[in-house]
Amino acid sequence: MAIVVLVLWMFTAAAGFRLLLTSSLGRARPAGPPAGSPQPDPGSQPASVAQPAAAPSSAAQPAAAPSSARDRWAPPSLVAAKQAPILPSARSLVEFAHPAGAIIGLAFWLGFTLVHNRALGWIAFGLVAATACVGLGWFTANTRAARRADPGRPNGPAPSFAGRLVALHGSAAAVTVALAALTALVLRG
Image 1 (cartoon, helix red, strand yellow):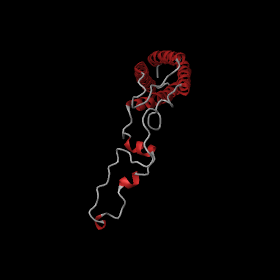
Image 2: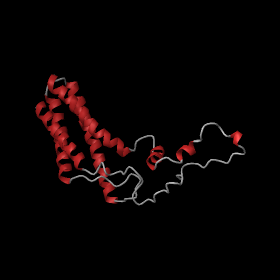
Image 3: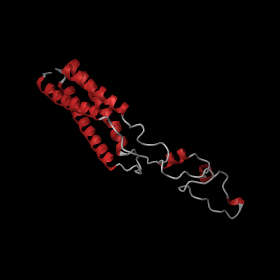
Image 4: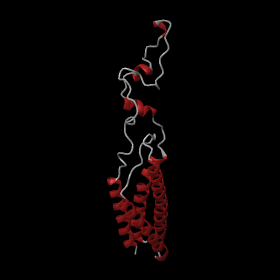
């Protein structure tokens, strides 16, 4: 039964991988400014860069160039990268945590399948349950964002996913969670 769950888990991962490849996730957040925003004049400074104050004499200026002088010729992508938040957004965190949790859980389930250690089975079950919750949250957030359909949002448009693949991935994940719990309960170490 552990092998059946392992194969089902890999099928679920393959469906999820296919879902990521066919989604608009890579195109959901543009690298530069939004399409509707006005482009800055190449000779002008960005609004976020402070203008240097006029110095009373040339002897009072430091030897190093001020940072605003360096930022004057910076490309818009560098200015945007400097203004980006240090911590990732919740959306980026979920986009990473869902596949990472599934892969780590799959590795624990493989260990459980090979040695039948109940602790590995319960760790794998916990990871797959947490991963399913993160995936449901991700799906809900994307569904709500698609309903709002505000292209002027700072994070860009919501990613779109193929409906059949979402249903296939979600139902396979639900069966995987149920069978993993049943297998971890039934099999003795």
